[in-house]
Image (tube, rainbow, N blue to C red; front, side):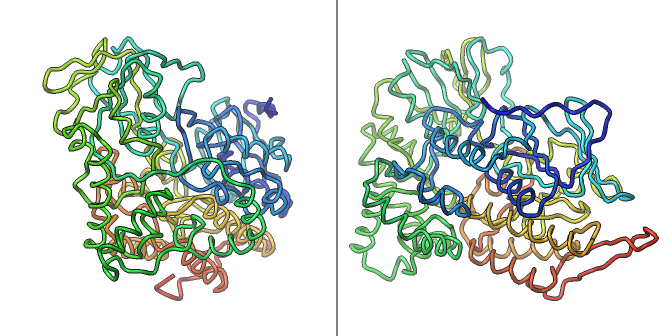
Length: 560
């Protein structure tokens, strides 16, 4: 059973050095660094009943990481790397949650975590240079440092469909999956065919009575290639973990493979086909896009070659020509690369049907199911929303976070979320973000480690120099946003409608949400900024009269 921290005394402000929001990968490592290395008094809050973050909530059937097991973990606990038993190539949600729980127990982290507690407000007090925190149970706290480890994909997106409140069956969102859900023999509908939707569809098709998939956009997918691994495979990884992590942290996508340096059109058509086929058989979405050739994400001709290969596979796998046509994408292969456990073949089952809701939109949800514009009523017992998340900044907008002069985070980010180096944002002093806006588009644990370690270093610097507050210059933040936009515009990702640019949420600004320059380059930028006296940040200290003096470390290079 999880250890439950005692609730706070209502009306009494409890003081900490640092408060961390979120007990997933980022929050746990942040707690470990600040508490055990910097010896700060730290409190972590999470609305869940236990640790895990995204992997606590996403318990839907088929939930699977698209990162291979040997790099979907922490690298900083080298003993654990050797001890942990790798049994499969990819990790299911229960396997990941087991790992995170083990880390929490191994490092005695739960004693400083308060579960089932929601941060409702966080306001920076300029006189004290401290964050004032309120929780849903009436608790009042303050801390010099506020660290948000909210996760990129945690603010659920439920579409506003007419009639949703009148449905008499079961309504589920994949990120709030009930433990007692029973789909056996039932008529089930799934809205959404992104990574989550395709995993759910593939997993539940064999057990439901009937399954209707409501697809807005067909997806390019390759097999995941999951399965048990040999002792030799595991021994080789553990023997070479130092070099593996060195490569991961210097690479672009941080998935544990060498990215290709070969242009697609530099080889013959027969050789291209062979390379694509080998990647298809090996499995892995990021491997297919980045290990095969160097330019699939940046050159349209190369991208079309990858498109054509996957389209041909769809036509070979799906038996019904009309269903195959609906499942075949015609746009760029330029979203987060997906992999599956047999999604296309699922539509060969007699109990599975596909509805193209771009051609035939959903009109309303009825008492007994869902009605499309053509007047057809789809009778359902269960309707599943696999509609993803208000990514990156969604959870920030659900908290009343206020910085200097009372500015709300929603106002600060009204044109779209921004940051300096993903870890901080102007007007919000002493607030550090783990996986904030415009961070690397990669396998997440290595990026989380990178950002946590950098934040820990700057906090250590502030403590040593007795600095009261820090924040980025707005000029530095603007330049970083421009850098992220410039890089994104050189890729094909910026030309596709995708959640990684905010396109899945109606009314959300279509802007840059990630740094697409790769983890290795990002780490170099962080190193250079730190080496250059934290270029782009401004700091405040208090003199002997407790009057604030400003120590400003201005931008010195435009390419920060």
